[in-house]
Amino acid sequence: MVRPEKVAVVDEVKDMFLSSSAAVLTEYRGLTVAELEQLRKELISAGATYKVYKNTLVKRAIDGMSSEPISSMLGGPNALAFCNSDQSDISNVAKILKTFANNNPNLVIKGGYYAGEIVTGEQLMDIAELPSREVLLAQLASTMAAPLYRMANLLATIPRNFAYGLKALMDSRPQTTENSNSVESSEADNAETEGDAVVDNAAIDEDMETGDVPVTE
Image (cartoon, rainbow, N blue to C red):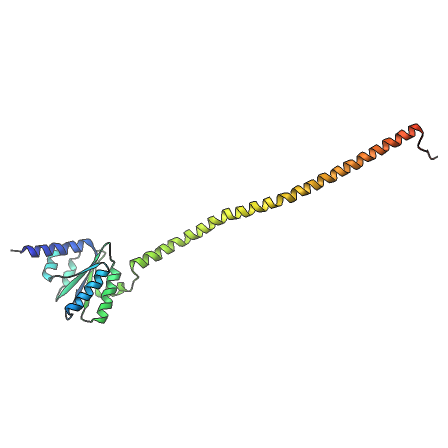
């Protein structure tokens, strides 16, 4: 008869696989309790969960699931690192495990389950070299923002150029008015001169009629 404690552990492991974005299987043979606790704290700081389970219970939990192929990696004392979907990502967890394994060769990264696929330990080492999700999102945001900035600058130049053009037009208007006034003054002077000529001719005609103007033979 299966004991309730084992049933609870099986259900827990199953829920962890279903709710996590990734799971990494490690073998900790040769590590001390203090070293395991240090690794666990580092993973917790990255939003991950690191727990030791009996292999038989893990096999029972993932039986019939897409992560079932991990069963072939089970052997020896193992612990699973689960990446909580909203708090951690596989690259950060892989980086921590890789760094720890470099300093503590007794830790062996066997493989894991990520994005619905089984991944090997070598693939996890490659994933550890990738930028974190935060860095990738920042790079993506920067790439997407670049054309928006260019568009904003382009749109900003339109009213600015319009203002410059309008100012130039306004600056040119007084000069045009002055030229117009000069033309009008010239025309008025011409008209006044012609008027004086008409008056003088009329005076001459009047003198001739009265005989005041000498006539040259």
